[in-house]
Length: 57
Length: 130
Image (cartoon, each protein chain N blue to C red):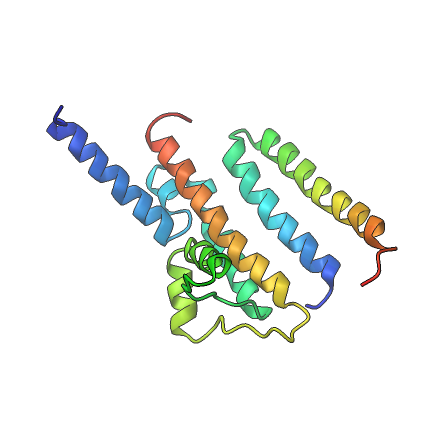
């Protein structure tokens, strides 16, 4: 379990799950909210990763 | 103004509810009859905490000379009983050389903080705000 992408996706899944359950009561709204949040995590991580690519370490 | 006996009982019940919700993730929702949410919290938060321990995250000590470490310790403690079980079993030493060390810390800290949000949600449900 050393893949950064897998761990990031797993982290995003748990956070999205809990936030969706806290923020919404209806199942359809939970799925929509959680799905959007999960996708937002993944997309922003990939975009930020590419933006930081040229930066030296 | 003094609180009536009913208000005091209600306050005592709320404190107990919040304590139970903190100690066992999802217990507050189960107590209030929100079974599906409670069961998901009960599974997801300890699992997230366990994954954090498994990938070499560290349970931070309460070191007040290092404010960020102390804050991380408070966040770790937020998950309730799994924190004490993990500590008692000798997990959470952390391995800074592990590739997954920082991810482990993020899992542990965020599991605790999410459980604190769940406690606040249970409190709101108990007060009829949700």
